[in-house]
Length: 616
Image (cartoon, rainbow, N blue to C red; front, side, top):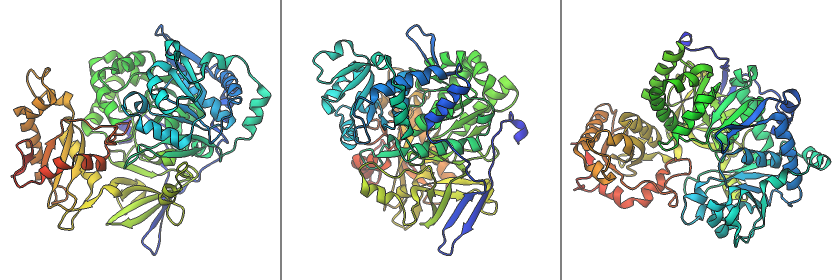
């Protein structure tokens, strides 16, 4: 019941469904999308004029104090950097590439580029710092041919830059000894702030339109190398208007956000950073992460910053819950002002959801609403939103104002396609991929399937019904919804599973390969701190726990398509260079199945190895 929650101004927009003779359905929000800004930096300048002294950006400095930029400071620095960028012969064909993670300087470089109509592309740090062959980074540079590179500290990126772009100019905050022997022209970031040509940057800004490319965001690529998704100014601004029409509380009070989500992804870089700028809020950059080694930074930040809205991925909430229980002072700060929490990228386990509700009640007397929805890099990203009443893991809600949803019958499911001002015009320099991404009526093909919560009450919204491309048939002709089953396995085996790959294409039964959550698995075994993953996987208590849950899940299955017959724990983690995992941690099912074909074959052997857990 809504009375159980703290009140928050979130609007549930009713929808209209049109049924076509060809079986397709067209679903629209009954509320139209209102006006939106020409560019994101127009909104920045608006807030600089109306609230010049409000803090826009803040990050921890070397002395651990918050270094803050007001809106007025931000606009001044943006125009100075833009003045320098205008001398660098940058364009759509020679954009700015940002290799470093989130920082004030990263944000300022991006704003300056946006202001004068120069596309920029924030690249996953994993392509430079984790990859050993720099294959994906080389592909990125070959695709967009950057004219300028920004890094915070040149040193860690030196090998990657020397390998893929030995002559491209570089802007660095810190270079030091890394400049020795470097072929790249190097400019210190501070030098960009020295002078401003207001007339020149104003002329460049006047030429920027909704069709101007704002950025190239690289998707992880479902079959291999990532694709450069074109993001226009119109996409970003229209999406912020959509967000504001649903999350109406953003217009009531400027949001305060503490956020770690990387800006090379649409969730952090478009959705969250855009919310702050569009609504005159304050963004505290969190250099922590949802890992045991970095969560302490986030906790320290939360002692200082009480966010009004909080965004995270399910894994982030899982670790946050544990730490908030251990640190009640941080929990009190976290829940003191937060009006809404939001998750995306995966399903949130019910036990984590329940724990968040319990903590909120303990510290505030009521639950804090949690929302989710659905979107993609190609949709800028937000497209559908769940209501507070219906929100649950797997629920994606209804289309936002301005979204036109087309549902196409496909293999017993409803495949989702979208038209909106927030949809990408395509993939940069990939006309073939662009053509395949749109149907004959110009709808972008999400590749996802939707299912009504209640077909008789369409306003209740939709559930996610899996990725169409991941579904397969058993040799009996029975369809297996791999995405739905994967989510079910993760939920059933929580918290001992990090991710799951479903196998069984043209086989007689379904199997699963599991990437375990080793930290939680260690809690099942005594004296496990020094055990290897192989030893842990062979531990009797670990095997007994997985075997028992495999049998319990089978008892709840509804047939061969939902019954996992065999399961094996994968010792080797997914590899980014083999395309098995994206830089944001999502598993590429197809790549894992192909790269580990021998392990898949063993799952279906007449005499499977003792490593494999199986039903009798």
